[in-house]
Image (cartoon, rainbow, N blue to C red; front, side, top):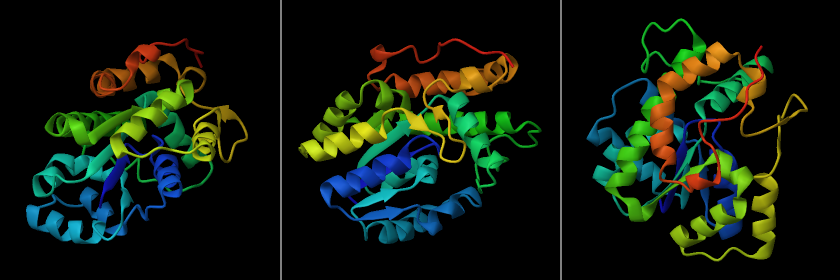
Length: 245
């Protein structure tokens, strides 16, 4: 494995990994089934070593759940690059509920390991986000030269700058067609099954003030810390208006 693309589910990992695979011609292993076991057990060094043998068969691996064990994985091997996607946890919750409304399967509501006995689904998603972001920050600090943290919001606001950051990490010059593809994918985003334009800040239209505040009280500080390693001067990560519902 040369490159790991990871981050909280619904944070742009799929689009980014697939685009990088197409652009570079590198092989992609997308959400390997073995990684899902991380949510059902405590991974040991031996288990992760065996997992590495599977991951090492591809150039790029996209696996959101590997965010939970990034530092453990780095303790086994440190010769791979990592692209970490982060996204406002309020927007993540909106995207998760979009999947639920449209009858698509999601594991993002199975968060008892992060917040046992939680009654509210948004609390579980927020607790998962907080855990992911803490592990991502620890991972970045262990290996900053081979780790890139990208904020979903920046993909829409300044995709050209994010392409440049990817180019510097990978040592790869993207051609004009690839850049156009990236810009198109990271531009205004349409909900796949609801025919509405969504993207950064959708929580201001879809969440009540109380739910939005609750999510950010749990996950906001860790999200902001992870985002501090991005190009955060571009936007107000914690702000935005609100449409009360």
